Length: 640
Image (cartoon, rainbow, N blue to C red; front, side, top):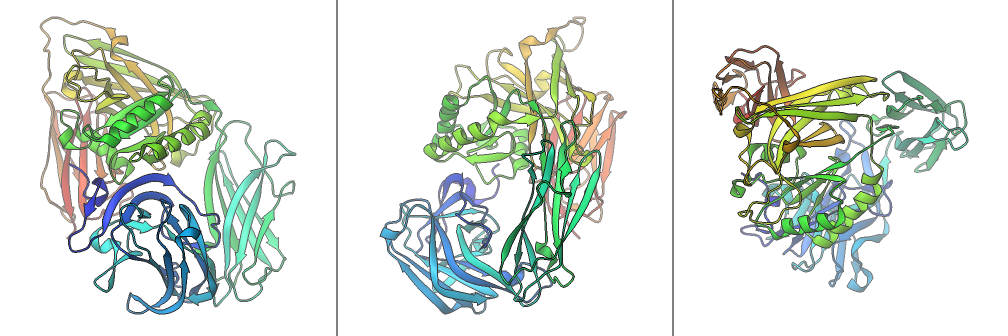
């Protein structure tokens, strides 16, 4: 079943209104400047909207920082993104607000179509206009050939006009924000310093040394001096804190960069490959707004080359855009460099559908299909072939070919018993010299899935890549510095997969290691079914093994009562894992049982791994036992 989201269909015509929503290119788009912008979109061309002639975005600057009611924004101009070359004029209106609707007009700018281009357009205002809430109205006729762009978001800030009223996108469950931005600067009635950017840069004169670079803006109406710059560099080995007292005076609305190359505030990198977490902060005792004072990020010096990368397609069999994806991928991506998995999360794609595929789509929290995920780090929406091709080529050239990791694959071995249909696979991973943060490593998971290249006569289309059948192993990773870890998958093949081809010749077992927070993939490998060592047992052994039964003690589940997850197997397994996921595919709670009984249960009190109560909603319960296919069931948690 598809996710309940208007983005999953190729065209949505909303009753009563004439608003039309179409999938877009999925391109990452950024205006020419960022430091002085206020916006709500994610800077992705995810949707094309048409059918309305007046659009608006409500910029509520006084809601940006909790507890601070003196913030305003001084607007000097606006940025508007057009996915196609405009043929209509644009009337841009800046207004104040009255009862959550536009009111008094500050200025109106009319731009003829001849002065507009596809992509970002900057329209300056005739003066600077300051208020705590500003409405930017774009009067622009949008037939389907002249749409506006929106990116994924809450939808509560973007509006369309109908029946003399502006309706927010969120009011019709459209989770997207228009690609509009206001250019200007914030105005505080008190002292406020803002850290616009922070980074640690390599010192060209001293290899192995990095130095801090701060970009600070004074949002105050007065000059500010004698402020402090703090930075922290954390590694798995140590944590370094440093600070600088800046006596320099920053005038109102001034922006200044402070760079400490070659000075005493430089930091020496570790001799071996490592992961680094960095954070910077600007501090002044009179600063009233701490919400914009800090920035943090991470980088690494991993030098182990990636042998290949995982490319995941969320697709439909009967969709032209999905077919275009396969054709373009096969012409761009060298099969020797990529492992391609195709997920069919729509139940209409039976026999290709599986609950594991649906859960994998939810793991990425993506808007719809078709979609491509590359290396776990980013996704390209593949609705438009030219844009998809350009994005894929750029991603391959800039990121895939330069990807590094900290873990190496020491090999996969396995056995197959055709009599019992049992598969046992061992994968050995090594981290020989890299230092990785324990909290980051603690969120890494080793996955193994059954996949098949469908070359059967009944195949509905010619696929590029493999069909994802089911996940047979999910295990936490503990590869600290100079360590080796062996992962074992033990299952009955026929309980997990029915080959679509004539036999098992086209089946292979794909495995990868991935961080579940940022989705970055550090290793991809596979072993073909034909490469497993064939072993035999007595002919009296059973061919098939009964499966596992899983049930919930109640459904819906009252959060105050909790739920009991019951399971029953023909025999006691050597190990079990029970995991609770939310609808985004994020792990909420999990249990690992080394010595379990054939019949038992786990009590879940509706809290996450940190002991916090979960929100109401649908949750997936996945039970895995050694030697059995995983079972997924779902339940509705209701707060009481």
